[in-house]
Length: 142
Ligand code: HEM
Image 1 (cartoon, rainbow, N blue to C red):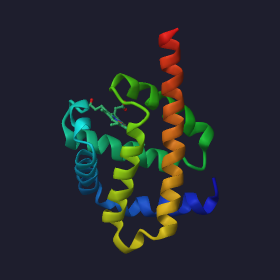
Image 2: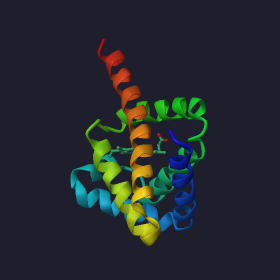
Image 3: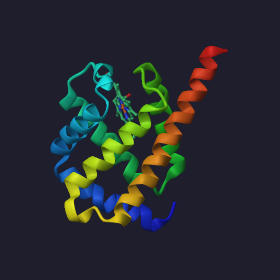
């Protein structure tokens, strides 16, 4: 991953974290509008869940320049998501909801370069989580 991509994502995330509760609420609004069938997967309090999500994205964003440390964290997160009923196809919906939230939260700061950098970073996160989840499911099925 290019240093420029990492810098764009880290800088824009700092601004999103200033409005983290609002951003989390916006994210779930976007997500459940896009696919209402995802709502029942979330059993806990949505505000609490939103804070956990924001913390985890923040932790991932801060570790982008240390992928060897980040990958195992994302792998275990991906495996836990199997138990939450999350399937591969859901990652696309979540990615679109996240990018829409960033666009709404960042306004003019959400330039095409920032958009492309986030799309790339989300793909890395989602692909790492999905491949660990698939390995986990293959082990369970064998
Ligand atoms: C960038 C990708 C994602 C990140 C960083 C993320 C982060 C998190 C975190 C930190 C938790 C708290 C529990 C734990 O740590 O195991 C969680 C739970 C959860 N996530 Fe994700 N997640 C991602 C993708 C997804 C996707 C694609 C879905 C599909 C709808 C999803 C649905 C859920 C559900 C249902 C829970 C459990 C909520 C509950 O028990 O009420 N997540 N996620």
